[in-house]
Length: 317
Image 1 (cartoon, helix red, strand yellow):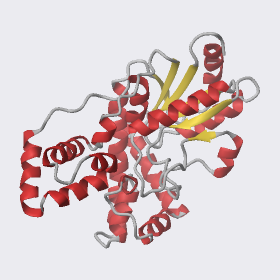
Image 2 (image 1 turned 60 degrees about the horizontal axis):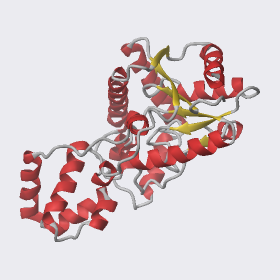
Image 3 (image 1 turned 90 degrees about the vertical axis):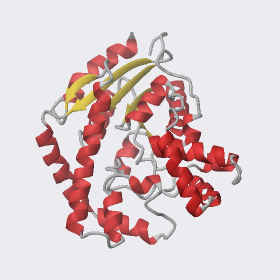
Image 4 (image 1 turned 120 degrees about the vertical axis):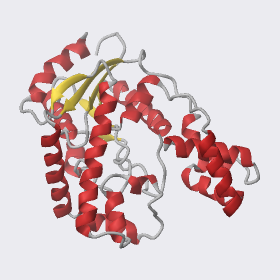
């Protein structure tokens, strides 16, 4: 692939845009000239037993084209952007070391940005959150808050004593403010922007209305394929709660509420489709900030045929 920086190809886009399908088509089209392997950049695909609702590539697809960072965690475990950066770097080194092309595929923009730019600095203090945490501690006690920290950020809780109220407060403050554990923020990973030659594509829907209809159709297909049974099996394990990051994934969270008897199946379905559309909107907002993403029409015919020459040219440059 030439003597310059290793090439990384990225295919991203909002949920349901056809990223995995395009990646497989590219892999099969380039197989004879430039073998590639896929690295998942999806926060839900890391979890075992969550196949239907995550649109996980089939076993047959993974046998045809090697995939990385899929099925590497139990749903009871956490997985952070820092974890992804470490694992993705290892996978990239392995793939390029064997003379193959790494293809990053997924819509978890936090992961892709963390890999490319490094993780962000700690967020500023929030006095309002600190007052709320103090008020909660007055009611339930600091040991209970330390136990909460152990659920949302085990690494931080391991380092922080149950009597260290100031550090417990800060760790919970960061998590509640950002949705990311303090231990993740503290993992200062090096930026990979200059380390690789990046070729980044974004699959974008032609219209928001059409995209929402596709998402509704897609969710209905997932339900027919057994998504509810998949969630019921996870619920029946007994060791998972809606606080686990895995169970906060769209579709799973809403059907989990149905399993708990909080809503009807119709209501859970409606909420899941709404949540999926909101996720797609957030992903598009992230992508608009990424100036060097090359836009591609989602679900357009012949994309792999169009992109293959560009990727080959970049790999040989």
